[in-house]
Image (spheres, each protein chain N blue to C red):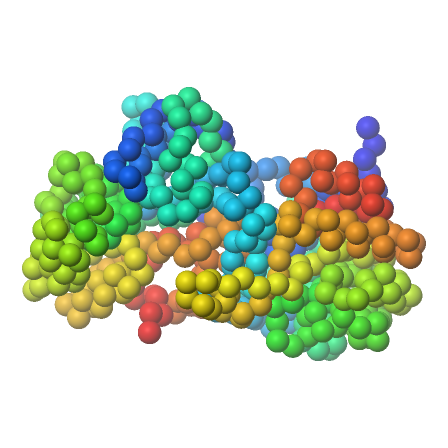
Length: 262
Length: 263
């Protein structure tokens, strides 16, 4: 059976990808699965400079889901290019790098460095991280700022660019249309929902950052609704994600209008 | 990040329950059978267990490996009931299947022949110390263990530890052994140990590490941070170290206290 799909210049042998932040860089999972069977992997959010991320506790379990506030911990794009890329470039799947930043210039500079990596056929522009003080989700919650960063990165990044959208907006389809108009090859949605967990015993928020991003089956109905709304408005492919635990969940996203899933 | 080739291969399998032995109302020992040899499992390593039939235990539960029985390809987990997830695990029956990822994390640094080691465990934190004391005894180490808890109900499996170590006991309420915190116990005053290993509540380990440091003794602790993936991908369980945030699941759970920023 032919399960291949196309997103921009990307050929995926099947529509199954991994979501950034859930899959490390790939080697973490080598003992458990054959990574080459996947349509693609999206590696951990990468920024221009090293980031330590937020203080512990940065995770809270909630019914049918979890909150995280990792805060884009990563060693920076140069370390990715020099130390991590050589260990994963042999994978026979599409490796996408999730790119984030505090300013438009940081996004542009990071994307420019990744553009030079032969075995990285695309990036995911993360304008939806809810766990950083500057940038991140701030870019993805208004059309002008989403357009500004997408347009600027499009100028320097020549391969496939998927823009990852935030659910923390009034009208996600508007943002999707806006990034489509300035050259996004696809959109991925949803990133985590801004949320909170409180420990009634200590009377404090569980997370050091007070708020965090909710993922897991708890958000699947919201993700499905948003994929469907975006599918009504854009022509570019949609990568759907949020609480997918099995094949049935994945099929529901395809039925809502997604071309690929994570 | 990269696969560490000194570590045993990690696997994710459905394992058969051989035994679920009740110690008292709070503690159980769950023994599961692996399809292959368990001889490569190291002391200090842990597993991630999937709990079924609840929406409140969405993530796998990280549990220390308590003992390894290579003669029957099995290992044991010491489980304290603390919530719905561990309650459901305590209800597993012989013959049930349970989805486990194992063995995860790094081992303790094993002392060698002729050395003298003190192990300090608090409550369910004694779990990784049984297999450790066995391996240390095999190495020819003189092994001493201090078991601490709030009361006598929290001092468990003493007979088992006696096979490998000299036993000392302290309880907060004095219902068994010396009364007080582990760091007030007589065995921890003027120590002549080459190494201290500890696992238990965070404040206890910090106090043990402080005492070890004051008396110039090397100290390793096994941390129990809240964890999600267990394999170094999600970066949720980090602790602050001299080289930045490190994952308790893959850089630990065992850390030398010199690298931990505990102030």
